[in-house]
Image (tube, rainbow, N blue to C red; front, side, top):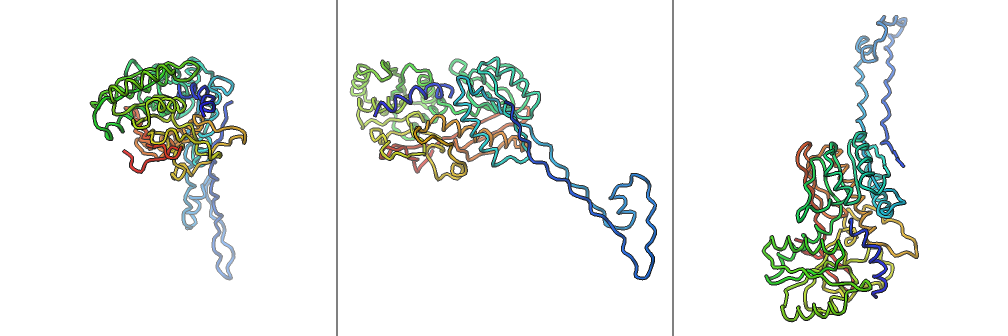
Length: 421
């Protein structure tokens, strides 16, 4: 069982850690034709001489002059809202992630494109390259969607040059133990392990009796961030949390470390463990501490997508473990999820759950940009990445929140819970 998950762990590490200009104008409305006017003839009488009107008389003035009803002018075609999607080059380190976001974004655009003029701009991978591309796009377009990497989002946020509505596709780097304050007109809608950890802390506070909690991670950057974010939020809620870091020789949790953890669990009796781990590591940990101790985790302990071709591809070892993830990974009957097609996958290729999440991010990023294009300062979206709340007051502060779906492993699969906090 572990072999299949280990192969995915290396692929997921880069994605979880961040975790050709192309133009398609909106269709222009055809101008209404002005009907020809004729003067009614009197039976037996000669046709009257035409009225002498000055040169340049419009059809509306002519109609008024001969006593016919005025012809209304054709309705004005709204000026298209110009949207630029900034993505790293397909040949760079973020190529697969960029492709997934691009495909999701275009999928949403194809279903809601009215009055939107879209351009996709490929950029370099580095923060300076992205900054130059951002400055150029900001001068030419009404809304900018991007950047995609955490470092590039941080650079743009700190540049002092955000002058157009900007929908960033990643979260900025932390400023010590606090999040970087984003400038006005900038939203960060990227999927965030840190935010998932905070949502799990909120969930735990409502469900469990007070007592010591262990937050377990390895030395991997995203895991340490998740454990720390859980601890900080849990302490704000009055919970007692201790973070523990396990070593990973040969990409697996060390046996001595797990033995030591099991001993501490037996002696200190924590009420639960927050696992800032992936699925294979969580299976290892549970085998060491037993099935009685409640485990809670993030989306990274769900290595599945809704495309489940192999019914034997399950993790019954995790039954009872609780997690949060986006509706795109958990809820096929969700109205928003059912509206969009799944990205194509080769027959001999296992669907990558992190790329599936980025595809879903592309869908919701377009829907957020579309809402801004409609001059909506505050709106909610039942999105494929969660319930989204957007507040973007022109020239003022911005606010974005995503609430993901709570789930529990049953019969080897993560299943949405009936009661959601």
